[in-house]
Length: 400
Image 1 (spheres, rainbow, N blue to C red):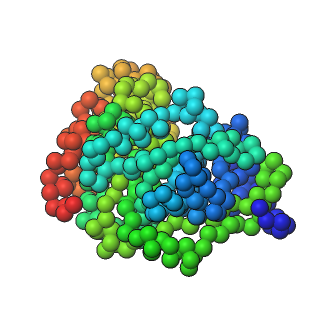
Image 2 (cartoon, rainbow, N blue to C red):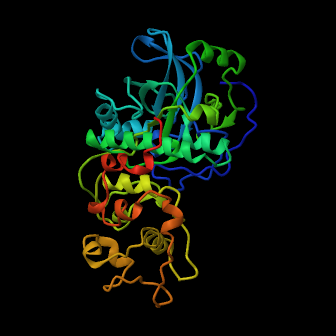
Image 3 (tube, one colour):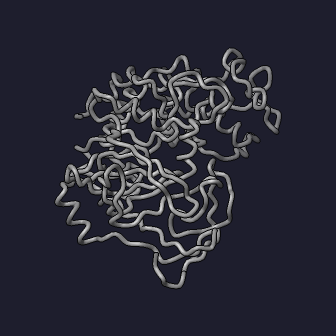
């Protein structure tokens, strides 16, 4: 740690184990120094630090961080190559030890050979390292180095992809989903930043990047516990061009929310706009929940519908009906315990205005040529499987 006077003071950063507001703090990067016992405990790694069995891996730079982990570029001294290491927070490591999360089991399940083409981020090794201060221990997952994620690639290209690239990404993602389902795993968190692409960089090229763009740290800060911390700057590998992306392999990654393939009751999954109706209304869910998230990405707005007097939750169901062209009916709603909170016994909304709500026909503009009306049904039992969707004619022109 640096002996410099801290320049950045924490102010507004709010974070918690389930995304709820806990502290009113702000940090330049992940909030180091916050205890694992309070739902935090990000790893404090040093550049050049050796970790893993027999000190096999040397930490080179931080690639990024998220709610429950940080990811680091490391040098494998045994195989003389680079790897990526996902380091869980102390809180999540403890949660794993208590068997309250399933990421380790999911990664082992999907990493068993044979692997389907363009499918899954593969787990190569795992181990636990001790943490500093109150951060607890850290479970580490070793994987190959990938070039980046689709969210970052999408934003770098002004949130626009050519249709040919979109199809390629979706086809590869679907292969990963099918592979996970075949191994008894529900991903439960499909989104753009959980889709990676393989790197085109050689070991020597990554070595050169480390010379020309060496690892850096943010200015010193005062942690919540009053100690001085200095987080590493996130330095992901360079983004590939759209031309390179047209021939890249895309892979399903991050199984931190994964669950075994079985009916789950009253357990939340996915971020709000991606949740299928059975999850919203506390019904049982399984692999069809992934199919919903796959098919309806970025098409639902989490907002109040003032025109019809609908709450945010009711508006989600309204949008679902508009986009599928179907209505929620008694046989569906009767199996979902929380449906009574949103619907009357005649399956109409409990809307503030108390009048009939007119559905807007939005199926054509969002479905393109993908036949969502038949394959992404409100009723999970009627949704197509990932294997079924892989044969959809919409993918027939994808060279992959």
